[in-house]
Image 1: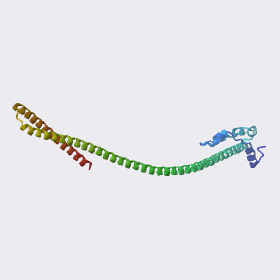
Image 2 (image 1 turned 180 degrees about the vertical axis):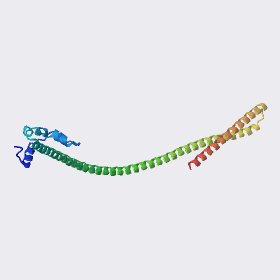
Image 3 (image 1 turned 60 degrees about the vertical axis):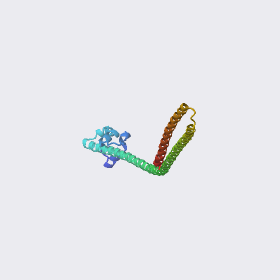
Image 4 (image 1 turned 180 degrees about the horizontal axis):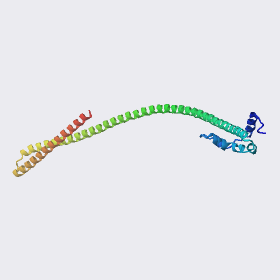
Length: 231
């Protein structure tokens, strides 16, 4: 029967008997040789060894096996092409979705950067305000410390001036007593003793007065020096 069929009938006959299998290998993204696809993914070996094929004479058998080989190869390559085309279409769709998501993400990032840039301007202004307030606070603190130091020096000067006035007043009393004692000569020894004591006391008071004057001059010099540094 096979030997009597024409060329078209043979192609149609074997076309209907080709079976596709092992779809995972057919759909592989890696390169698969054609002969591997034909042997592993179709029933090519089964068809070429059918008794109806083997009983044909040599020439006819070769012609039929060639048709079987062609149909198996064509169908498995067609199936692989379709599967890879579907995969490529899916990849394009995924790439388009990813590009759309990427565009949205880039837009969001741009808005976020703009928002952060505005926040940074506010932060810079606040930091500048803080620096100005700290500078003002330092200036006020320096003025307060200078005022306290000036007040303390003034109090020390007033205390020394008071002591100095007391010493001068005491010295004047001693001078008057000394003049009064000059007219009293009732007893020579007593007069000499009191005179010597008054002289010693006067010497001590003079020494104390000189010391106080030096202290006052030093304090005044310190005050003038501090005022000069402050200016």
